[in-house]
Amino acid sequence: MTNAFADHFERIGMPADEAWSRAALFGELEERGGTVLNGPPAWYRFSPGRVEIFGKHTDYAGGHSLVAAVPRGIALVARARTDGIVRVGDIRDGQIVEVDPATAAPPEYRGLRRYVHVVARRLWLNFPGCELGAEIAIASDLPRASGLSSSSALVVGVAAALIARARLAERDEWQRHLPTIQHLAWYLGCVENGLDYDGLPGAAGVGTHGGSEDHTAILACRLGHASLYRFMPVCALGDVPMPPDWSFVIASSGVQADKAGSVMARYNRAADAVRALHALWNQHAGTSAHSLSAALASAPDAGRQFDRWLDAATGEFTPDDLRRRLRHFVNEDGRAPLAAQAFAAADRAALGELADASQRDADTLLGNQIPETIALAQLARDTGAFAASNFGAGFGGSVWALVPTHDARAFADEWIRAYRRRVPAVGPVPWFVARPGPPASEITFP
Image 1 (cartoon, helix red, strand yellow):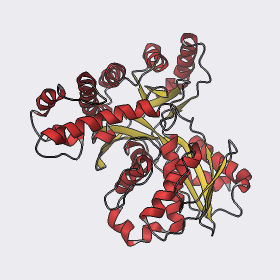
Image 2 (tube, helix red, strand yellow):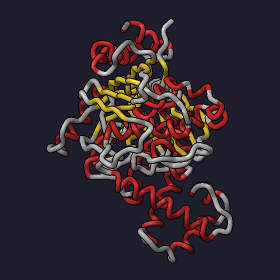
Image 3 (cartoon, helix red, strand yellow):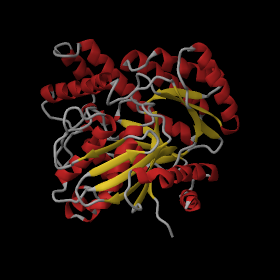
Image 4 (cartoon, one colour):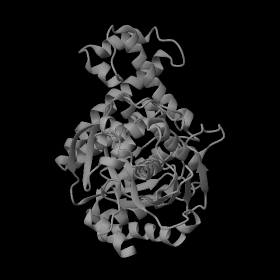
């Protein structure tokens, strides 16, 4: 059976070594999935992680992001059960949870149980009468809370299994509200953050106030390409081939950044500042805008108008807080399209300058950097990367570095040694070399 999984991933374009590593994950599920599943699987799915190249905290403001899927992720097998319960087990850490979509989540639900319940409950509410009972086993090789969006990969994978189980894509309301993969990505972002989606009312989310960048990258990115998107709504602006002699080296800072746990309050503060700016515009402008990005695009002097109104701002954020948040959004939102152009032109110098500015603004304006991520990004440049930046929620997590493919492993060894010398107290520093991988896929067998 392992050969069949490898064949699937090679058919969708993965290099042989990566295809076999994906097959090995499914091999683990075949060997140990019986602790979760009481019978043979009916569905097989793979959900990748993602790398946010540019677009720090821009998606929930309606801005731009340049993203790619990575070849690592979550392997998932599932089968139906008849009692309505959703049972999910992680075979690597031994955790098994069961949730009832027909009941609201108790406040003590955390971690895996919280995510599974949020997905199942939202589908149960938005598609009345659906049969969601399922058993799902997962195996992941994404470092957790490392900025690679392991949580959204879980949301996408569990949702895909339950959508198949309940045959939701055959329902009229699905065809009406979710006709494309971009619509589904936006909807799953709303599932995670708890917000309403057009025609499909919101419910309790996982607690974060994020957007749909992660779900879009996981579902809709293209093998070998960096993908430029704009959000609210999700709009594909183009896929740019990554030069064949470039690779990412992605390394964890060793500081976990669980956006629905340890760093949730700080993550949400950045999102809530955007909400405050958006509300300020709608309060004073006379015509409402559906996002901060739309507000800024609605008038040629929008920035000056904001500047006048900010001095009178009250509440959680000071005028200076909001000015920094607005400046960060404007700067970072503008970088993603420029970075796509630099990828298309294979312009290493331009990417380096853009990445340096993005990293600097994340520290001084967004405020989501810590000494470890600052050091890791700077050491990547010092070691020879032509561009490098922290990505994801921030407050920990990982850094991507762009390097020539033929130097990638030697670069990584030197980079990680330098980082360990600089930050000797840090724990394990997982790293891997990657080129953009394929999006989430269902595994079928000829």
